[in-house]
Length: 405
Picture 1 (cartoon, rainbow, N blue to C red):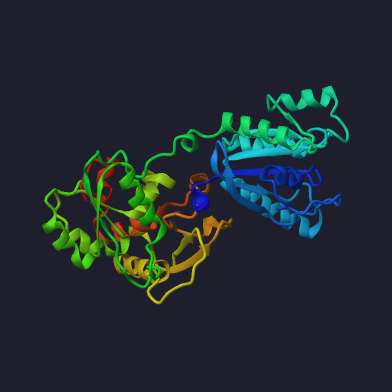
Picture 2 (cartoon, one colour):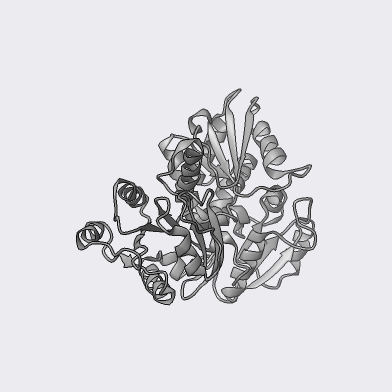
């Protein structure tokens, strides 16, 4: 459980004014001194993350943020970093003290409400100065059951917060969705095509491949793993026709040629596009590739920072495919990590990675920002399949289209 990737954990953000006791609350919850605690307002300068097992919820990420009422040049930078946490927050905890909720807390609440993020309220430092009944009533107009905390009674604080977190926890964290459980049945055979190339870490396979393999086993199916160079032999050796072939997107062209049309085929990246984002939106967005013009700008977003290799999929393979598809002189711009650019109107399409290191809420938030900016968005696997002319076949297992390409 401790090895659960951050992207698969429930992200719980702790927000509020400076010196409201956010860091103290986090330290109590995790039973460790993770965040620096001080009477000086603004001690927390950057978001502080702690991954842990928080039973009965399971794997979570707690994120302690800087105060949203910070001031000055550095303060505005801290606020900007805190606001970026909104995009990957699954549950928000708004912390205040006996002064109650003011414009800052209400603005936070309204922001989370607009994003459909569940909100809990914590009224801190009740052992120092209890909140008045009137101010408590003001909070209950927004959040029904504020938690009154005395950090000297940490066990009770943790119990009450766990109780409320469970009550508002999104359904997909209580019952996590299967990656391909709706595509296979008990006893089916699934073939995974995993190239061992420069992108493959030595001695290991990449995270999406590991997660898909585990999901196949969880669904009581048989998994066969092959490189693309041995795929024909693998298919011929099987006594049972595979229910599905899943390939690394970089091997799409050869796999599409070697797998008979009667066998459904897709890619790891497209599976994750469905699980982490909106497959239909990504499918529709790919059409913008064919309409690109000379000097258009394409934004390529990667969820994680990694060392770029000679034949990098984002910086070499996808740009080459798009140039060959369109025949246009196109500028490619790259963006990595959790930060997301604000100048979306400057681009003609955004191509997102498979998001194995990002939670679904952050991907959906990015999709919404693109829709607001009227910017088409797609993902690596779908973009590659589109450029190769096999997109409809690659998404056929998911029944999102009615025509054949």
